[in-house]
Length: 250
Image (cartoon, rainbow, N blue to C red):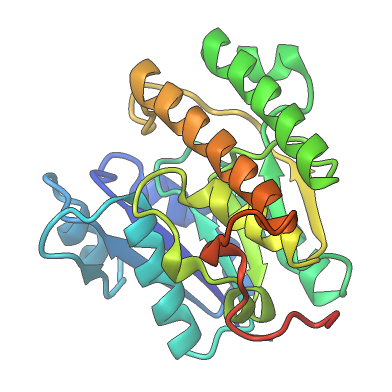
């Protein structure tokens, strides 16, 4: 099965090389980097490291960056797509295990879970307020969708081609809530979601949104859940939940 690792990059010059070194090349067919108009040397470094990056002429947002990643990965014939933040916040060595769960037919979507224990997450540098809201939102999201994920807010994810061809991710936000909308869509359409533990890595060079944007992100995720319930009750049409093609279980 052809596996493509996609890296949605923005100002990742200081961490890109370490991220690439950790990706097990035996587990991926190619690495695709999409740069969202970085202001540092991300693009030049990517080319120096042997990549052929796709570059947005202007900053479109985190969600829009992923849309370019998935569109191009599908065009290149990927059977599995692994999304890795190039800020070295996630241990990309675990890619092989995430890919294996999809190859073996155990999961359709696999996430890296940074919150195996509270102590481990905090010792890894996760700010206490982010840990608190991560736990709170993950609990709501699991309850509302019937899932049991350890974390809903991971930037380390693997998707099967069928998921990307079914979930209407093109309709999602161009901002950070894209990730939450995608998981809500995948759960609603009956795909099998799972996760594996990954170490939490918070440090100066790793990208991270501030408190204000975190609050907006959290409220946007809750709004997406509320719209899902209204859609299921037939009280509101929510196009984000209408599949591009019938899901496999239909």
